Image 1 (cartoon, helix red, strand yellow):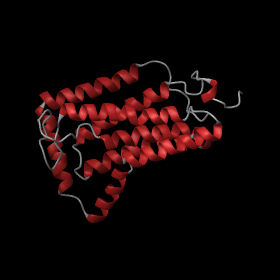
Image 2 (image 1 turned 90 degrees about the vertical axis):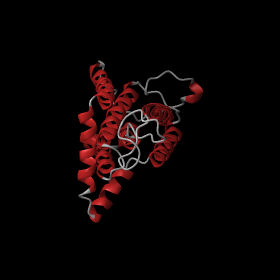
Image 3 (image 1 turned 180 degrees about the horizontal axis):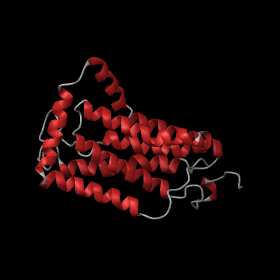
Image 4 (image 1 turned 180 degrees about the vertical axis):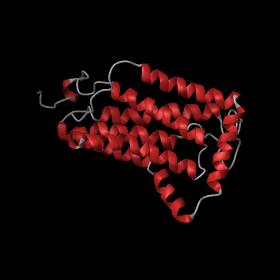
Length: 220
């Protein structure tokens, strides 16, 4: 079954990502200069948005469209499952949207933060807006990371690394520049997405015990 090499043992970096996300969230509540930075970045981008750059940033942002990414990832996993006669590719592809949705939607509803052009920049503003952290940025890391894992046997190392790292950066730049998310929304989405994809890559999908009826791949 196609799979990337698991993330090495040792959870120190995962712990740093989680600590950074918690610290960022706390700072957005108790450290006003960070809110002023968000407003400054939004205003700077609003004043510098020529049409050609806008269109390019729109493309960058749409690299993280969750619906399309879910369809492509799950569809590819079913094709690989059929080709290799094992359900293994479907498991991480199916877990990715479930875990992402639970964590991102949960945090968005809990923090209740507005968008750069409507609602409040402050956390827990009790409005209908739910923009922290950025789901688009998180998608740009999680789904492309799963795609890199599934396609590992068919891609070179450089291509896999580009697929793992570049989309999230492009979405970060695009959605922040367009004013669809605060800068710190994008930072939070990046931290959360990287944490999720590292957790998914930690599991030994190739050797995970499964009933024979679900795993009929030839033994090697």
